[in-house]
Image (cartoon, rainbow, N blue to C red; front, side, top):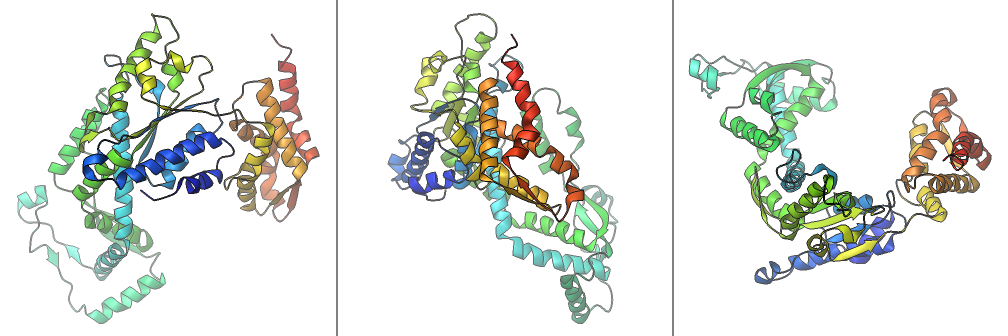
Length: 458
């Protein structure tokens, strides 16, 4: 986990998320405490558990984005799950243990990517040597022994060395490869067949995790199958580099590190937690909702979950839950679950001024995204200050007059605003278009009229 001070974490989050200082401060402290815990003596480290966070606020104000950005910032395994996808044990649906399995999968992917990057240069050299062999005509003979044909046993007689191949010839091909001269040349290479075994046909029986585990087990037992592919040299480079990189990393080491990282640095974001709150009725879906809450308790408090990579302890995984709580209240959650989230943060609804800042300040602001998209067509987009103010005002008004969906409303408004420009962009190549307040009002007048009328419809 990267070492950032709380102020540095908030500063990084400010680049992408406008406002919500309280929420940013809470997650920054939670992340810093994880770093502090890593410096503690081993005997005391186990006693320090993360303080889980409950974010309460309307949709589209940045709850999910704060959690996702902070996980990316410190390079921690992160998984986002919807509370509504889970069902009580005994009902048809996903069980809560699957969120931990998903987290471990994310950790394995993360560690594997890091290991692959570390061996990239070595893999390129090995792939280059293999590719030169193929270009020089080295081929494998078919094994004469039937057991070799079935199980792909290595044989000392299977490699045929071409005659009159010297280092000068290899060096000549190497130079041509590196210069790109042979990129469009076709070559036949032998690659590992990644087609899943026939067991894939039976993965739809309901026990998804069990079937996937069985597939992995059988694929490890069976030998790797090989097949011939005819591709261009440029494509062969990528295929062989990937294969060589996979061969250079130790998957047992990857899994061991991934499990450790998931247990100590993992973050699970549980969205829509208010949808499993019981609203006071004792029949119907409320029974299952309360059951899901009870099933979540041991996971969040700390237990051991079996995964295909072995047992994983959840004691030090950081859980961040979020919900709008516009129908149910936080107090509608069972008391035990409320107690598992000691830090409670209220996120504020977005104002018109917030919309203006969202359109101008973040690194990935929508205004910048549309500029870059249309620049690919040769169209240069400029905005006046009044235009940005008008866009923000329109988004804010529509939120007030209909459902308040927060910053997501800007996506709807901006897409409508640029619909005509995006359609005609190929014919406008080389031009500069200035988005003014009048242009915004003209393009969005239908949307505004519709929501004005909606006020008078019962």
